[in-house]
Length: 274
Image (tube, rainbow, N blue to C red; front, top):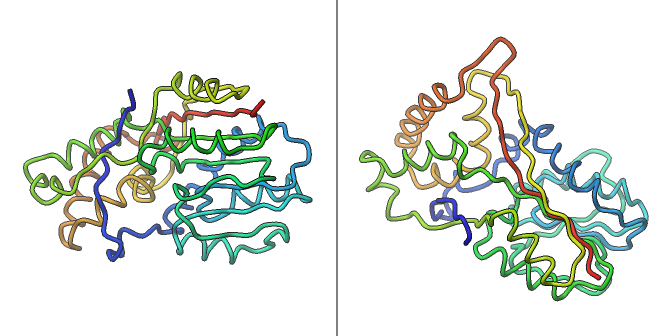
């Protein structure tokens, strides 16, 4: 059974519903580390076409373009703000291009030899059904590599869900709550890939991030899970919500002399179609 994280429905018109590249990239090194671990398991020697689904600001997509300089590398994302930063990055590799699209509407074309999706599929409802469609459309010998955060049981995310459902915020946020991105148990991804005729490996890693700053965990979730919550609130309510949430996070993640320890689990899946 899929485990569904609670995510509010957002309005496209709300400025707070938009992705903020500066907030997201504050922890770019911590967010890039799982990507590096993921693509190290993709053993395609010289692919001609590579696609990164949910590429964000494109900093990690550029790693793919530099690893395979003879490949045509395409980064796809639904956020115009993220793609604007991606296209303006210095020293943009000549073989790297970007396109704005909902990744749920994308399907593999002939000749795509590597498909990467990093920390994106958790935002897609029925993501495992989408993966099955991708696998069915992939060329023989093509590679697929996925990473999703396994964050539903983290204190930061549990506290966020509890606060959203509290007496103070239930009426404001409760009616807009729905099941958002889907994260399956680790073994389900392996079964899914085997059933689709793929050689596969699936694993889970817990990263021990040491974050710096006054409220680093709050800053981390501002770039991801907190974003759709704030999008539902007025400016005054958003400020109050953040104050209450911040107090909970400070208790759950106390600062030490070396920084704030933020353990974070992620699920990885890499496979090659037979």
